[in-house]
Length: 428
Length: 154
Ligand SMILES: Cc1cc2nc3c(=O)[nH]c(=O)nc-3n(C[C@H](O)[C@H](O)[C@H](O)COP(=O)(O)O)c2cc1C
Ligand code: SF4
Image 1 (cartoon, rainbow over the protein chains, first blue to last red):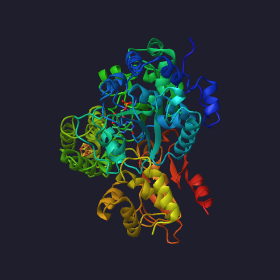
Image 2 (cartoon, chains in turn green, red):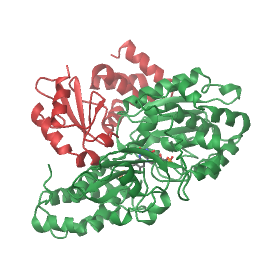
Image 3 (cartoon, protein in one colour):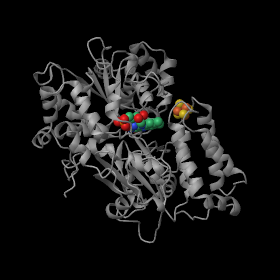
Image 4 (cartoon, rainbow over the protein chains, first blue to last red):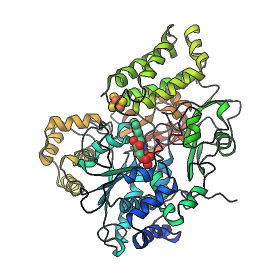
């Protein structure tokens, strides 16, 4: 069986972007034509719901279900908004960049279809400021799409109209959190908002708003073209579709691969990433970015989908794993991660902001050989405090994941830092 | 005073949002693109155009790390300090850069050519360690390639 790679198969190998002509030659905008011609918005929603597509931004929420909360019909509040979350700031994650740089029109078509399904009037692409190539290529592609009649008033003569704008962000991890993103788009600090109300009901400027990740949106044209059953058939497991998996750290070939959902960590690491570098052993990995629990060698055969990774005690997250080898200090790695979360905490909730800063100092002391007995218990206590429900947004629960799992799987390393009053891993 | 060009660019953005306030981040970035940073005077001018107080604007500006409220030099280096780069040798690159430039993070060289800043994950983990110079991305860094890149900066 040849593996299907709908999201990446048309991305030119030479690093250029597929332009409008190239995209149309491989079937681009056919899904939009089909939807506008033959499908009601409800039918598009239904197809996506039946496909089993789950959000690729990290949380894995059912995309069809998310859309089903949008108020529809003549008396729905207007304007309605859809947003592509292209903030991609989860450390260890580099998948959306590839999709935007290589095939910007695929994202645009997915966003237009999402807008049509939710009868939205305005679409924003919210992109981080450092993604210069993605920004340039998307800006050009949006202009091309307008010129070809895929955007603007009365798209392809259907009577449906949509405006699409690019918003280039000015930094900070919190902008990727969907309600922080809404505040950023409104010109405010990117503090999160209370939920409920959910953005689908009351989002941007209080109007119904759908926020989806770039990879999620890129799947939509293919689902509309080939149907829900086809999408289900792409995966190895119950969670549908393909997934962009990545690996970074000291593997032989760090990179990104589109594979059937549910591919095992072992296959990704050994076949695609080429295994560990010479002389190094695999000790563990964050399976889907900084805010996921470590998995260790006993989990190598876990299929990497939302359900199975959760059963193994972690989360699929963004699906791009960060690999820890046996010559890299797990305490140092966690210290780096907690430093990141402490820096990016918006300061709203005390357990998050002050707890993260406290944990950061303890970890730094451990690294510097100044750890004290009781430190590990303090760290554990903090991690429990960041659990879902104790804080306003998911940043703090995310920070707890690598810390609590490292304390579980790499306990000896932590204890040795205290006993020996130094770090045994001579880095550099 | 805002230049005609800056004002025109900000007005293009105004058509894209229902409120003036929403344009403020774009407006500050536009001014920064032209002047390198956002001064108190610029904050006042933008505030007038968008009908916002300087205090409100400054509160937004200081939240976002890519808006500079202090002057920076012509070349801004941002070195990724997140996890994949850390594993792949960030410490070594940082030490090389700080020694070679004679400055720490947040500082500008005496000849005012380079400003050095840390940055969170650049989404270039497959070519870690990575940094940007003037928003151009460079990966798989080692001390020799860093030297070549610095020498290439005019
Ligand atoms: C602190 C934080 C940062 C986030 N950053 C991103 C991001 O950069 N990109 C993204 O798509 N989702 C990010 N998310 C998840 C979003 O809140 C949201 O769940 C997602 O955009 C929904 O899209 P999806 O359902 O298509 O996955 C972040 C969440 C948190 C708590
Ligand atoms: S959990 Fe942290 S980042 Fe989220 S709202 Fe609270 S303080 Fe802010």
